[in-house]
Image (tube, rainbow, N blue to C red; front, side, top):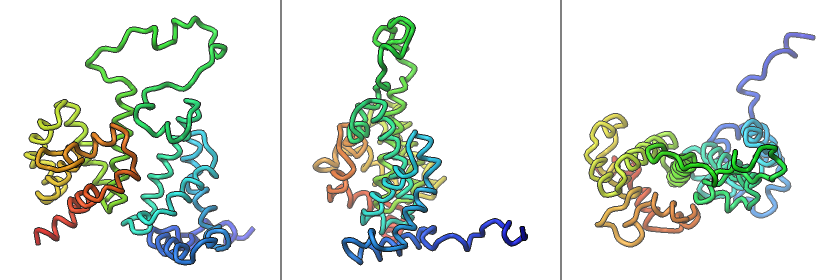
Length: 280
């Protein structure tokens, strides 16, 4: 066999939609082509095969098949927010991961995927039959165990915190925020909120946190806008008064939040690029 046949594929062998700009171009073309474009376009078929391969490892991690990951990617690619995002592939990846986690939890809980996405279901363990165990019920059933010490958070609280950070990050990504910056800032705010245990106290402490602002070179308007968006503020009106984190915890979904014009405007205005433009 010749050396040519043994050579590894190069970057140039990748399809154009493997890059974020290439994906954006293809999604715009498919959207403008109208109904039926996804069924007949050869690039669309190739994109779905590419997505199945790209997320195969992620699908196996959560006990799903590559075709399930491709289906989740397809759903994310239909959204206009994906086409207009700074990094369409990043948005698709987050959406696929969230969907796969929800489907994995839904199978374990014997419930629907939509219910498994909700934070109040994150505290439940997977369903188990009595016949699955050979030891007495008292040896493993949580209801018959002593509760954990108050100073040590339960796994359910940790799962809820991760779910909250993940969904808040996804919302900000859909509104143009950098994924890594949004995740870091939201995780920091949630950590301080957990430590202080009070939203007003957390807001007052965080707004004076100049070290974090300096670390990420955040404009003052951006930082204050993000804190008011996440934690709420007495001067805010309507549902913005309670903050985005509180709304997610009481069950508001991403589509419901994206339909809130005031919230969307506040999130966009708090972006670093918007704050810098305003300051300029």
